[in-house]
Image (cartoon, rainbow, N blue to C red; front, side):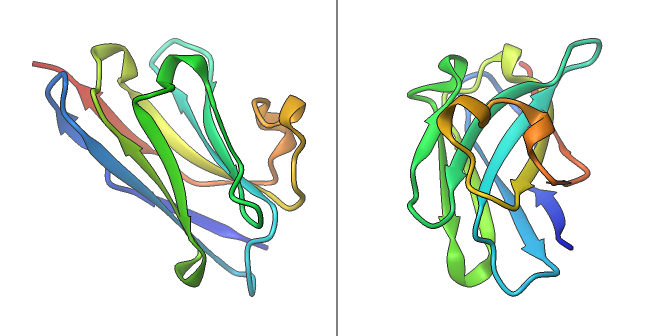
Amino acid sequence: QVELVESGGGLVQPGGSLRLSCAASGRTAIDGTMGWFRQAPGKEREFVTTITWRSGNKYYADAVKGRFTISRDSAKNTVFLQMNSLKPEDTAVYSCAAASSRLITSRVRFGENYDYWGQGTQVTVSS
């Protein structure tokens, strides 16, 4: 079993930056795929980015390429999401997800392939 806890959300002006953290506990180590999804009010949940824990391979949604960066700290079982050049359309609840196995590229963008989810952290981009 794995517990995921997100932190780092808040209110930021357009063009600003935030860094989200997702700390994992309950297992000796994370050895699969971890990622971030987001959901705005009244909208469907959408894929943001993932990282394969062992290899460090990353995959980004087109909407965040060049602005968001996912990274990991294996010693702390933590994954980070650095968000730069934030736009109002980035406003959403951001949730961390973990898959027990390594997901191939064609499957990383679908939430049903993940086994564990955090509670989410609110990110609001507004003047």
